[in-house]
Length: 269
Image (tube, rainbow, N blue to C red; front, top):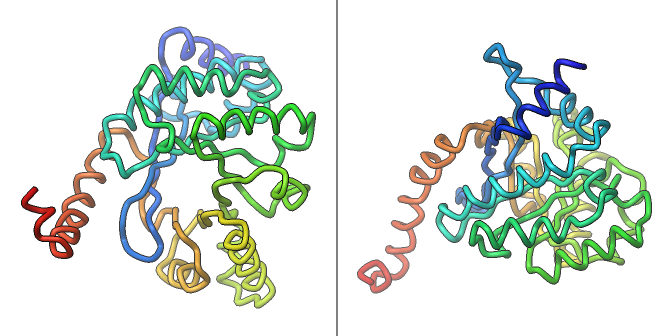
């Protein structure tokens, strides 16, 4: 633990973290829509420290705000260089809300990078809403006023999902990977739950993303159920910014070609 604490302090002081990016694709057609930014920390021997481990320690050290600000700044700066139709998604820790000033950090990151607010998506878990919910809801409203999208991550695994869906209009819900994996068991109840989540999102005007998609069969079932976006190893593993840039170039050419076929005049322009 002492070694990891030292790594975290060094990374904060000397810009030593890394961001990996995992792609999210539209379910209806194979178009790249966004990347989720995922924090990584080297262990000093060429390997990586498990994210759940070092993030939990950073929270206990009281350094999660500094770490979270680093992630926001670097993710927004990287995304500002992508095509305008591709967004970036950043996870926010419950401890960041406890420290306060999340909206101020987001506003600063957007201003510094020049990224359009609508291209930034912030993912929070239901745990964020369990304590001092009025304070959290005020912060979420401030983020909404900035124009960024707020998404509830790991939906269905917490304690209070439905209690907050009517108090704050989330832009989207992410179906937890545990539901996606359970679909393989042929359990009709799980399939019904997933369809219900999708229907709920439709009624509330939210985009539904399924994460943890690893097989073509899972993707086809989730697509048939009405999911809007899919994310998982089937579509791409988390990788460096340079790999993300290559992924964008690889998928952008077919997209432009499809647009050109639909509208030849726009292709000339």
